[in-house]
Picture 1: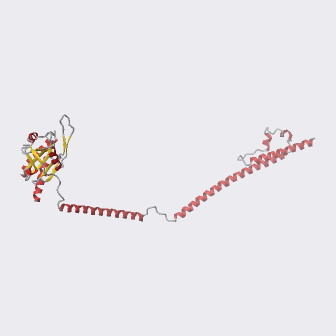
Picture 2: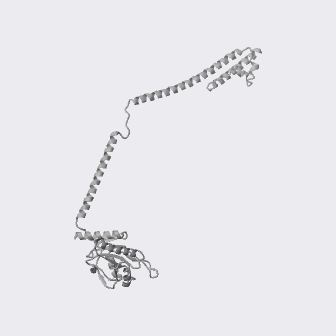
Picture 3: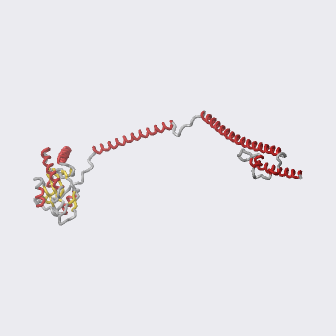
Length: 331
């Protein structure tokens, strides 16, 4: 009976030994370096069937040997994993060192090579600069040549014959403020200043006629030239001979007022390139929009120059004297 009990205990121990070895081998691959011994397993309450079966003296030596074996196996596996980690880290370090050394070797090898220039070298920059200076020089030369050609052409035009006279002026047949017929031939042999307006003009016509009258007197004083001032109405419907007579007396004693029929006024206005148009009527009271120009005519009743609204008395006086003197010198 005793031998049978010992045999059963030994078989249970072998089974336990196999289970323990299997469990230990499974734990070798983990990162936990702690491996429990057989004594720890014996102390656990999960194995209570071993405590009453295994005698204290018999076979405990073999259990200690097995524990030492298992502990040494776990330590070996742990050291093996540590060695593997160290070897992997050393291999990484070696590879990094190799890479760094390779980079240093490559940089060292590159240091000996000539550095390649940028996209714009000094030679290309100098060529570009020379080209730009050449273009600027050529443009400046052509500009000067073009200006000289224009200047020479203008000189040739000034020195050449006259291109023609302005198509201003012409024959007309009107009635003066004394109710007598008048034509352009009645003014031959005299310098004449002609202004177109109407007697019902509120402000522009009176101002221009006052300026004309003052200029006529100044021209007489300065240059001793007689100027005949003429007023031609562009409002034949209202400006009768009597109306024109009373109107011209207010400005200058030598001012001649002319009027006529609608067709006669249209003809003379067309000849002198004068614009006029009646505005909207309000109870038979209306205004006439017209050109504000004075025409200087020579003794042949040919156009010389016109003077606009911007000319004051002095500029009008000096301008008329200048034109008359130039015309006399040409003759």
